Image (cartoon, rainbow, N blue to C red; front, side, top):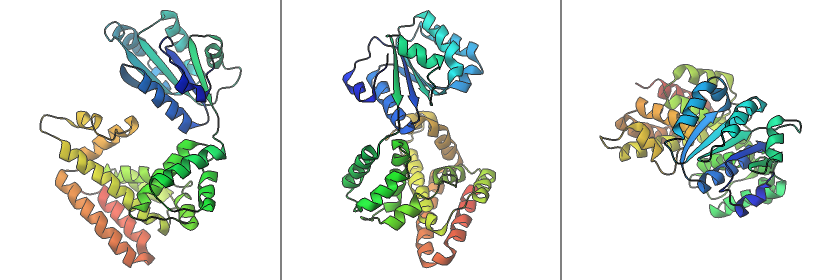
Amino acid sequence: MIIKTFEINKKIFDKQNFFLIYGENNGLKKEIIEKLKKSFKGNIENYDEAQILNNNESFYEKLFNQSLFDKEKILVIDRCSEKIFEIIENILEKNLTDIKIILNASVLEKKSKLRNIFEKEKELIIIPTYKDTSITLLEIAKKFFNNYKISISHETINLLVNRCNGDRGHLKSELDKILIYMNDKKNINLEEIYKLTNLVENFSINELVDTSLSKNSKKTSEILNESNYKSEDVILILRTFLQKAKRLLSLYEKKSDNVNFDSLINSYKPPIFWKDKPIVKKQLESWSKSKIKDLIVNINKTEIFLKKNSSISLMLVFNFIYETSNNN
């Protein structure tokens, strides 16, 4: 049964257990999946299609056996394609009532078997997503800047929206980047937005910082060598370092002797996205609390030094990144 995105808040899905969300709007798909997860009760388990296809017997065994003991469970399967059709068909035959399964798929053609079975069967829910309109993205952006009391022109917002290719996920990623960059600033101009969002050809700054904080010096070198960062990127790089370092310090301050890193990360507020949890754990294992404090001091000193030596800012930041990834 086809459900349109605007109908989700009006529907109650107590009797449906299988959901297929597909399309090219990754940001909207993520929002829908989060709404569904919050409306259901049960333990959430995350899978990737490849993970299931490579070991489907183990997946079946865990799925069917655990359902005897767990009253309710929510399975989210990402990066789904036509390849998972037979597995879903086998699960449907078992008529499970204590499990909710959410499939996150990219674009599916009209002749797709997976798409067809979800469209025809009333007990199955399929939600297509399409690119966001400029009007929708403009509203999201305006709300963001109003909430944070950031002064910005209509022309600058239009540039930002046009660079997001109709995907609110891209827009929110750019807005997060802007928030880090702003720090105590209260206005942002067209040139700054252009520079901040002109990083498509590079590895993301998040990946660069995460790799360096994980002390993976080899991968850090690869990212720096294969990317084309510019001098205007250095402040954003440092402030991303600062934000992530402060989160690590906050985690350490909440840690007690009888709590392991996994439990600490799982209970942290605001919640850490599941894909980032292994990265954060690796970073915690790589840094002591005192070393993180030293790092935060060093980040602030480096930013001050950069402002006085802007002509060599890129070289200084690269040196800082190398030192961080090799810090023992």
